[in-house]
Image 1 (cartoon, rainbow, N blue to C red):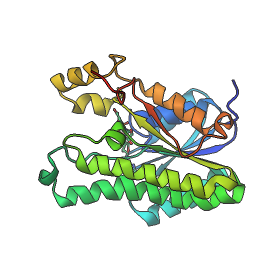
Image 2 (cartoon, rainbow, N blue to C red; image 1 turned 180 degrees about the horizontal axis):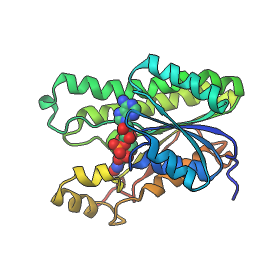
Image 3 (cartoon, rainbow, N blue to C red; image 1 turned 180 degrees about the vertical axis):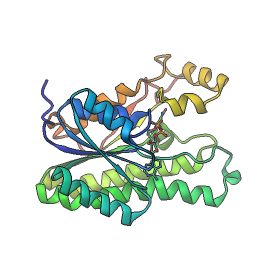
Length: 252
Ligand SMILES: NC(=O)c1ccc[n+]([C@@H]2O[C@H](COP(=O)([O-])OP(=O)(O)OC[C@H]3O[C@@H](n4cnc5c(N)ncnc54)[C@H](O)[C@@H]3O)[C@@H](O)[C@H]2O)c1
């Protein structure tokens, strides 16, 4: 099935590491999109990986929490690669796990700066390009922690819920310009980070409360992103799509 992504310029934030971002960048590139890898950490590996598969990608260093850096980078991407049509807001952090009042305010602020404001900064910078082109796809990578809450994850969960409000509002503001904005809420996905940060018995307990009794693969998020970015999803906007093996369902 042709997803209609050939030649579209796509930005994927947080795609330098070995997680969901890289898989989404690879999926979009394999559909023929030209992908800008935006990350705070070195990006060469993802770019080389995409190029080795015959795709087109270029790396851009940027801290998404800094609005000036974001504006500069988006201007550069537009000049280097062409009009931006797709933005995948994947980058985020989880600075502290701890009960509500044990999370210091500085940690709260950093989670909000990166996850909420970073996502807003990126979306604001690409918005005029999408409006001018009368076409756009914005994806927010939220989390089941954003839709269900997360024990010991108040700051992360708050920021992951905030991007749902942002996407729904952008869906409304972009509707008449063919700009869609949707949200993916992953369950537990086998990224390097998730597997290393969840300790032994926690992993097993999480698997047991997932009806499919397994964790998701990064490619299962990437496939969903490719669909939502495609022409095939042209009438889908403002939606939260859980990709969680049924974890958000009522289990007893
Ligand atoms: N892995 C899971 O189980 C899971 C579950 C639910 C949601 N998610 C979400 O999926 C996304 C990816 O998660 P992951 O598991 O691949 O984690 P990850 O840490 O591997 O990916 C996050 C990426 O964001 C980048 N980043 C961090 N701060 C940045 C900044 N200020 N500016 C630019 N880039 C920055 C990091 O360098 C990294 O490449 C996140 O939004 C996360 O909240 C993951």
